[in-house]
Amino acid sequence: MADIAALILPLFGLIFLGYVTARIVRQPADSLGWLNIFVIYLALPALFFKLLSRTPVEELARADFILASLLSTYSIFAIVFALSIVIRRVTIADGTIHGLAAAYGNIGYMGPSLAILAFGEKAAIPVALIFCFENIMHFTIAPLMMAISGSEKRSARSLVILIARRIVLHPFIMATFAGIFVAWLHIPVPAAPARLIDYLAQAAAPCALFAMGVTLALRPLKRIPIELSYIVPAKLILHPLLMYLAMGLVGDFDPVWIYTAVLLAALPTATNVFVLAQQYDVWVERASATVLVTTTLSVVTVSLLLYAITNGWLPADIWSGS
Image: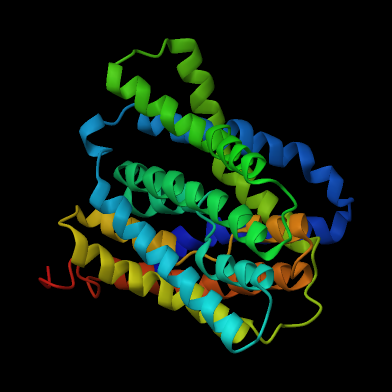
């Protein structure tokens, strides 16, 4: 358990330090802007590029892995969306944010650092694949569902252009494809740019996690929404469980890939869900509460998951038992 604590506590410690610092210093929310820009546009893209540019291309062409990941994640979205519509009688717009709160994990800020620390650099490939394709789905689903609900006031043509721009121009996805391109053509990266990329990549995890802590502190929990009674277990328990079963069912993957996919599914709700809620003015305060509650509880659930993996309690392939 000491090994798990040594892995988990520094990561969640950075979130905690960001939270405490923000509560003490009490800077306005706008002051976080440049740090977020650094993380999103430079540090994390550099990390993805660095790891993927050194990866054999054949390891990136795993459609079965991508399919299993998307199937698991969007099954969770569909289940929670349906529960919200049928049981809570919410609008399509509200139900969309509920579904994303259960399916859209913190795979950008927490995912790369935690997976690579837990399983080594081999985890970078599944992290990048999951991040790239799940975000393509998120960027597509959110405006599409909001258009259906009437919250997105755009023509079909402008909606398609918006979705395409968000996918193609997202820094993480651009860096992912750039890394794949360099790996495919075996293009050597000169020493000076490579060193700059290394510096940026090393800053990704601490800056991202600190920024996440500050963000949580700037949105204090006022009340716990009733919807969290099914969103939280869906995100922290059902999502990783379904991912684990799907990975074993769909393909014969390297254990590191399976464990990485399960770990990413177990991560708390992404802060981007709150951003989307703000953008469409739907379920805003409760989206913030969901991020805070799932992040807090994930200290326990993610720790238990990693303990189960490292102690052999979770076989890589449940169907064969190995």
